[in-house]
Image (cartoon, rainbow, N blue to C red; front, side, top):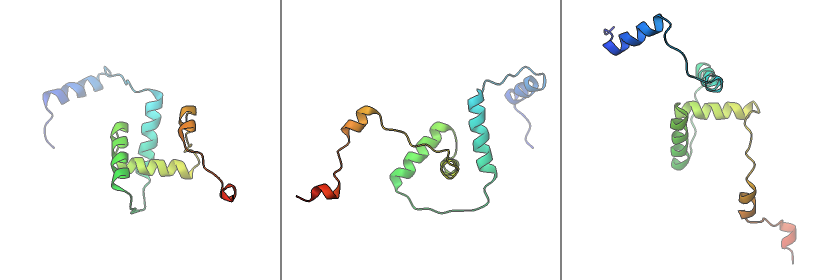
Length: 109
């Protein structure tokens, strides 16, 4: 094992003496625990095809969350199958901007 540099030694000594204090919030710790749990219990491999744009967007979101993109995908799928993934309701301004869809029955004129 390579020897510790002076900064690592300083951190190790601070930890061992009890001088370090966690700054993580309870919500952040819960999110990290969930990510760790999802990562730890993977026992199957799945290959999927998706658009390059969707993959790029997922990778950006994963970077923002501070996790690997495959972990984010697994987490989203896990939340979906356990019923914990909720669809966002569009904001009122977005609803009015959407084109109105007509029923096929109303097209008979």
